[in-house]
Length: 371
Ligand SMILES: *[C@@H]1O[C@H](CO)[C@@H](O)[C@H](O)[C@H]1NC(C)=O
Ligand SMILES: *[C@@H]1O[C@H](CO)[C@@H](O)[C@H](O)[C@H]1NC(C)=O
Image (cartoon, rainbow, N blue to C red; front, side, top):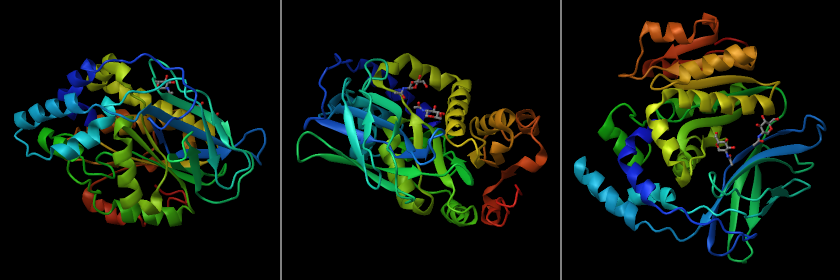
């Protein structure tokens, strides 16, 4: 989430980009680009033999004008005395300059399922180019991962993603990304800028091993990464999770911020409760999909994770099986903060851990009810 505050200097670039007229084209054309977000899937509440995918997609014009972005990044780099890893930064931020396309219809084949996913058309403003929908894909094989393919109307482009189906019971893990599994240094401006803009992402030491161990001890839980970062960082975060956390890969939920959301972006930078409400809203959706599962929730003390997970526990009880909070140096780690956040949460339901504790977390019998 805090990645937003480090891109604050870029806000004005985004606000200078023209908002295009929505198009009414129906198909994915050669000139379009698509992000199919990896998606969770769940059993239909009315027919257990049917799988429903909670799919999100973004369609945008392939040609992205990065010139304004590049010139502003140059200034930002000068102001902060950074080096000239400009190309990487422009590439990482280029989706902020992308122009979403409305009215696009997609039919996506899902390997191993009887029915293709037919998504509603992508939206006009304010969610330009986005679509998010629960879609039935009929009966599927029991594979843990299903590959989707969207064939564009031209032979030469196709897009793929992964669907992660999971049954109605058993365990899941909801995890934050920045400073929980990835070193983002969100509380220090220069290191945070470097991490967000051009450095190769680094995992928090011990976390890939811990999640790989949970993947076994919790018997292939549904991992869902809930990040406060805007969706423009999705390709970057997706690469990171799928290379460094491949044993615990899962859908990554990001904020669906489009270029029409300028006022929203400014609010996000200043209003902590927005992340709280946003993340609780995502957990509401996860609860809707998997009301019979139990989730281990993992986050950190830099922003609102203690408050988010405690709020979810108060709403849903043992659906939130356990809350683990990474204590990050420099964050508000005061007793008062945690006492307030966890006021009505039994002390057996949460744990605040330091870097030194990470190696030992795998020994906690979460499947057996410990936390
Ligand atoms: C985008 O997010 C807003 C606010 O959370 C929500 O109301 C809207 O339905 C979302 N749109 C899509 C396409 O996901
Ligand atoms: C999909 O369905 C689940 C379960 O009913 C619900 O919680 C979630 O909000 C739905 N998502 C969308 C995008 O409609």
